[in-house]
Image: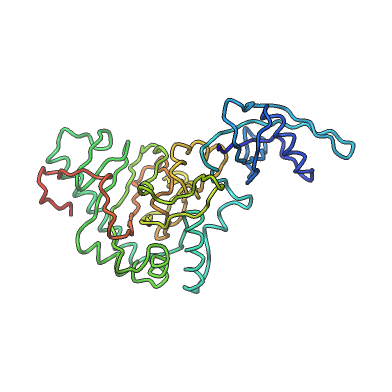
Length: 373
C-alpha cells in the first residue's frame, strides 16, 4: 500500500465530490485500482490556490500518471481542472487542517485542568503545542544572564584549548557542546543552578507538572536534560530531522493487513523550546511538521511538508514555550539578524532513555572531568 498526494487546480467547490474522485481515479491510475480517499487540504502553488487530496492505494508508482486534465460535466456546465501527482509515500502524510494550525496549537485558559486536558490531547495528535509566557520577566532575565555567560565561557574554552577550530565554520562535537551546522550550536547546561532553575520556575508549575504526567507518566519516573540551542548571525537553515528516533519495535502508526492503524506509542521524551528573545522572520525560529511524530516512515519527506504548506512556524515571544514530541520532524531556520538567537532546550524524558547521539564523548579540554560552566 502507498499514499498519494494529488494537487487539483483550480480547487473545486460545490461540486459532486464522489464524481470528482471517480474522474481522478480514472485519470491518474490507468489500471483498475482500489483507492481509499482520506484527507484534503489547501495550499498556494505558484500563486494558484490548490486543493491537496490524499488517498491510499494498493497501486505501485509505475501505474500512476503524473499529470492530467480532467473534465467534469455537471448541471450542464463543463469544468476542467488539472490533477497533478505531488508525492507518493509509504504512509498517509500529515496535512495542514483547512482551518490552519494557529487556533489548534495555541490555547488560552486560566484553568490549569482545562489547559492540561487540551495540551495532552493536542500533543498526542499533532506532537506540538505552544504555551504562552512560561517565564515572567524576572525569571527570563535571570536565565538570559546565565546562558549568555555560559556561551561566552564555553567559546573562550574552545578558542583556548582548540585553537585550530574556527567557531561557526568548522564542525565539532564535544561532551559539553556540539555544532549543528553553520553558526548553530547546542551547549549543555549541567550545573546545579540550572537544574534548580528549571525545577523552580518550570517544573513546579502545576499545569506543566500535570501535562508531563499525562504525556510521560508519573513524574518520579521522569528526569530532564538542559541545553541552550543558539544560532549566531549567518546561521543557515537546517535540514529536516527528528531529535529522537522511534524506539525499536515501537507500535507507531503504520499499515497492517487489516488497514491503517492510528494508535501511537506513547512519547518517551518531550522537548520544551523556550526562547530568550522574541522570535520572528528576521532573527529566525524553528519550523515544525505537526503530526510527523506518528510514523518513522515520514523521515525524508520534509520537502513534501513544505510544498503542501503543512509546516508550523514556531514564532513566539521570549518566555513562551513550544513543547514537542521528541520524534517530531522539524528544522531550525536561518538567522538573518545581527543578534544571537538563544533558545533554552529542556528534554523531559523517561529515566530509561539516555541521549547518546547528539554530543561527543571527549571534553573541550580533552579530559572527562571538565564542566562547561
